[in-house]
Amino acid sequence: MAFRPLHDRVLVRRVDAEQKTAGGIILPDTAQEKPSQGEIVAVGSGHKAEDGTVTALDVKAGDTVLFGKWSGTEVKVEGEDLLIMKESDILGIIE
Image (cartoon, rainbow, N blue to C red; front, side, top):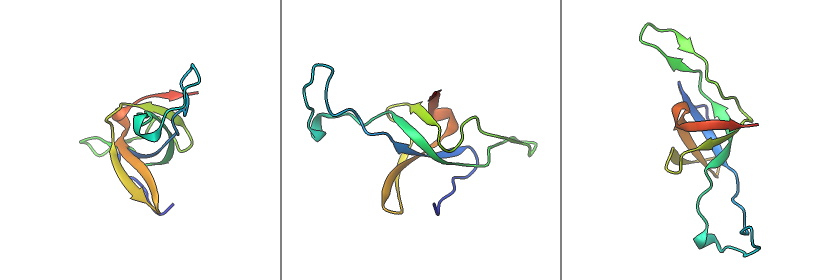
């Protein structure tokens, strides 16, 4: 990938939402919400404190994470729609 986030930012690829409800009803694309789950594609170097020390991020490339519904900024990298967000926007890692 030709993009590397800076500092405490991460690049996330959304995981596709489920196409059917639990009852088996197929949802059209217009009725689906954007998923709030994704895979980390790339991470920055870490959070930089005022004294210059760098704290590494808790997430790494390949982690599956949960994030807030309105988190991040949508960007297009190499023709793919991705999200860039701060690590603090991530709610947790799915193991």
